[in-house]
Length: 168
Length: 249
Image 1 (cartoon, each protein chain N blue to C red):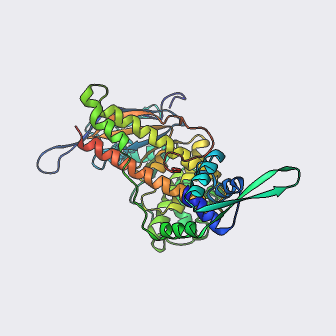
Image 2 (image 1 turned 180 degrees about the vertical axis):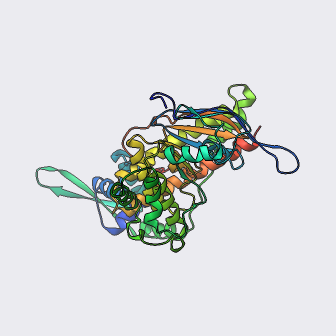
Image 3 (image 1 turned 90 degrees about the vertical axis):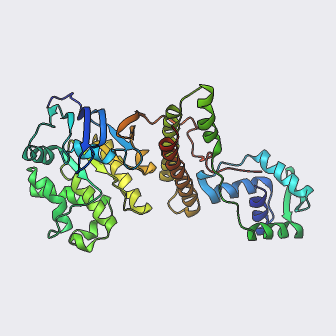
């Protein structure tokens, strides 16, 4: 979230609520709607690190509005972020821990764990599919994000199948 | 036959292949019942027997032992010609190999089952236009199968399988050759016909396709290891792919 806010501020100064709206518009329903408190907390940290500064803008009939803008240090941090390679996704290991460890405790058998997990993944996939159907076809960003999520889920399912085949 | 009989009932179905040397069991005692209007996805690793199972359900492969009932009628004891009649009347197929008639146009390929089924030429043409339109193939109607890409041929095979509004649609990896846009067309059509009451049994490893189903059957080593509904997700109804897309502060 730090970097997305920095990137939006590099485009133009904005206040917290505008940043929330911008994130929602760009990424659509696929992105968990950021909570405004979380945005202010992040902005506060960025300010403390010297990456952004804020000015109070007076408004008629309303409390002052805090507008944030990016600093030179912020711009530099953003450049570094854009240029460095991004970490690959990590294997979702929580389920694998259950799969390996739970049978040792006698709590569950692997077949039941895999079967339950498969049905759960398919339920998630159904959500993603329905989300894609509801998404504005013109919003390529949101649709690509959903497609990425679907491809990850497919890989998880394929891996589940491998676990079922190879773990007795 | 009877109104309330399941569309498919397989009882302890076994298939053992014996090509020369040792017998190889492909399906080892499968019980499966599919009610009218149900959409069942069959999943499992390659070699788990899923294709063999649907081939047997459609009479394209004989069972070694067990019973197969279709629409309340015993089918595993039918002769090859008996199966051919049953298939023409009741079953639509989409298989990994497309089997389109090479010297007929796409339009004629799709109309053929409906015409053989005794539908009027006008109705057959209407149904064909509808199906090809839904699958984004309206402008390919006069092409011959050889002029089509693999993905187009696969969609034509689906249109043909649905031409007759069969009692049962059987499919083996119906999106295996499709890119993601064409897969979307196929999913949309499957969702529509299922909504109209079409009974569907399909083998797939594609989770998008499987997630359309009411029920998932998982095979492992020729046996069913799981058979049940895809649960309602526990997540809040609105959007948010939070499990896969993560916000980090």
